[in-house]
Image 1 (cartoon, rainbow, N blue to C red):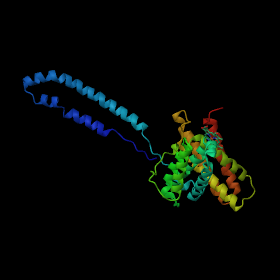
Image 2: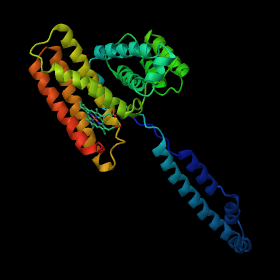
Image 3: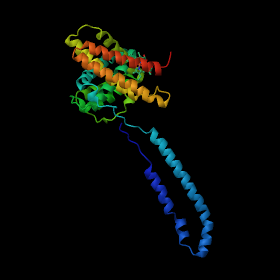
Image 4: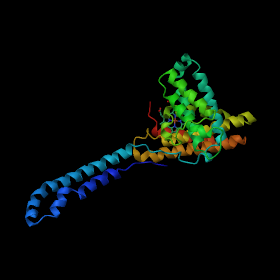
Length: 304
Ligand code: HEC
């Protein structure tokens, strides 16, 4: 995890300088005996002042600690992307999302229909896939502009009007065409897509894999498609790993992250197995991955 936090060293140093060069104090130190007696009279408010300064400094540092907690902590994905999913799978699935967003934003009517449902999910998942492309060690055609794809996708997901959504889609298309607009590569993984949207996508692809893992044999198209689905699930698990807002007790965060990690590991394994058309191994990994879904839901999902 990479964290950028500011601490108030400058503010503190300024305060300390004021203390050591306080003119009243300086004069007192240089005073004669008479001046010294006189100085004691002056020194009382100056001592008061010193303790006041201490209080201010204390307040400053307490405030700064509070501020540091609020400041963004740029969290990279918790693992190496290339060890979670091949970049080619992520690129292909991101492109499918761009196409489906094009359909969803075809006109005002389709936008209004999908605004609260499919659009935030499609766009949010695209943001996650684009961020994974940004952080992958593997090369991809539009990787240099992948951060711009991500930002365009977030703009679509959070758009309040058809025009805004279309602007977001234009930005996505431009970036996908290879022209970078200077978006920062860093992005917090818990701010790419809402957890509810992640789960909807997880559920859809998981259902497909359940049917796939029951087939006796796979053709080339099925093997490639199921493999890509499992890769997407593995990357969605990374985003769920970082989005711990549903965990009400801080000490239970490791448990949440254990379930997400297990889900990711099994989906990465399922992807490799589907690719090799090893249905038995894929079915085994799929089953283990689904134990993590159920365990996590039993522990953390609000009962309806
Ligand atoms: C790390 C914990 C965790 C894992 C792993 C997990 N879930 Fe969830 N899931 C949740 C939580 C928490 C919610 C409720 C979130 C919400 O509604 O915003 C949820 C909600 C859902 C929903 C309801 C979504 C909606 O709003 O319509 C579905 C469906 C779902 N999960 C399916 C799955 C499936 C299938 C898997 C595994 C393949 C899975 N989940 C793995 C924690 C998890």
